[in-house]
Structure formats: structure tokens, C-alpha cells
Amino acid sequence: MLLRSPPRSLPHLLRPHHLRALSNAAAAALASPTPPPTPPLPAEWTEAPVSAVRAATSDASLFHVSLDLSSHGPLLASHVAAGQFLPFRLPAAPYPIFLAISSPPPASSSARGSFEFLVKRLHGTPSASLCDLRPGDLVRVGGSVVGRGFEVARVAGAREVLVFATGSGISPIRSLIESGFGENEKVDVSLFYGARNLQRMAYQERFSDWESRGIKIIPVLSRPDDQWTGQRGYVQNAFSRTKKVVNPSSMGAILCGHKQMTEEISRALVADGMSKDTILTNI
Image 1 (cartoon, helix red, strand yellow):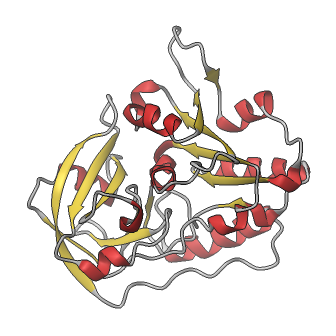
Image 2: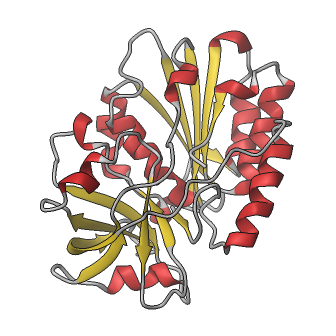
């Protein structure tokens, strides 16, 4: 999940003036009185070495990129919530970009000392250059993460949580799941995860682990092959076919991905009686 300006945004490439427009649009879509504030740029920048780069999907449209932050204690410590971003200054970009951290916060993970990212390799975008780096290459990053992440305290009382992710928007959802969200047996968590096809669906190798943590995974493919027997179309269509909001006062939702998906599902959930306060994004 990539941003070019401080989050509030979706995984599109945005300039600061686009960001303000998108923030207002997102706020209007959810009928909230004012758009939430955007985090400032970090006051300090530092350099960190790449520790790993490898394809995350069989068609190499998404890449795993890891940074070795073992000598950057304060930066590691600033990651306290799933859904936060790390700013990057890349030679190909005239302004900072922001990548959602896909690894869980260090306090909830045994894999300390690094940040992991899911990077979309889209020709002509600054982030694509990250996919060509090698271990040991240095990148310039912010001295601290930015954003509040998913404010899961707002759904702490829910008995059922619906999670929606599309494309590289699954990146911060991985962080959320692997930080322990959903392991409470009193909460039912369903993940609607959309991609074009299985060749573009990242983290399939982690599905068994996620399911063991209590997550029900519903893959949704918009352009599957003829052998696919699961959900077809877009995430919002699959949700409308398979799930109804029965008790909105005891439900929560977490969304990350394409703007159209987040807006359509948010409107549907509100129309079904869910409170806007229990519909979370990380932007």
C-alpha cells in the first residue's frame, strides 16, 4: 500500500493537493462532520539498508521488501499500531511517498529489527524502483512512522468484525492480523480479500496461519480462470451476496484498498445501521 503524501489516502499515488481533496471526499462519503487531520512529515530522516526483496505474487506484480532497522531503535519503537506508514524519499520521486508497514508492530511480534512492506510494481511509479533494489542497498526513510493506524479500540466491544481488503491494501491488514487481532474467541472476524486472480493475490502462503488465528478468509477474484469455484466479481458485490448486517450495534468493519470499494461498502454498512465510528480505515 503506497502513498505519496501524508496519509489520509488510499493506495493511489497522490500529491498533497490531491490528498486534501480525497480526505474531504472520504469524509463526505461517510457523512462525518470534518475530515480527520493528516499526520505531518517526520522531522528527521535517516538511511536504512534493504535486507530482502522478492516477488510476493506469481506474476511479480507485488513484491516483498524488507528493511533492516536493527540499528534504528527509536524508529522501530515508533511503530505501535497496525496500519501505520513509513515515509520514503526515493531518487525517482520529487516528494516523499508513504508505504504501509505490512509486518506487525515489534511489541507484538518475535520478528524484531525490521519493517516489511508489500510494494506494487507499477511501471513508471517511484515505488517500482524499490522492487529492483538488492540487499545492502540504502534507502532514505523517515526517522519515525506516521499515521494513527487502525484504531481498533473503536471496535473493542464488537462481537463480529468484517474486514475488507483489495490489492496491496492487504498489506496493513496482514499487520493487523499478525498483531493478534481476531484471536479473541468472543469475536468472529471475516476477511473479504479481493484481487484480479490468484496470480495477483499476495500472502496465500499465510492463509493457514491466519485461519488458525480465528480469521475466516473469503477470497474474491474479479477475473478468475475457469477452474475457480469461489467468490467472483468485486469485494463489495461478494459481500452483498453472502453477508447481511444482522445486529449492527455489535458489529465493526475495517477497510483498506480501492477507493470505490471502501466508499460503497461504507455506505452499505451505514445504510444497514452500523455507526460510522465502528467503520475503520488507516487513513
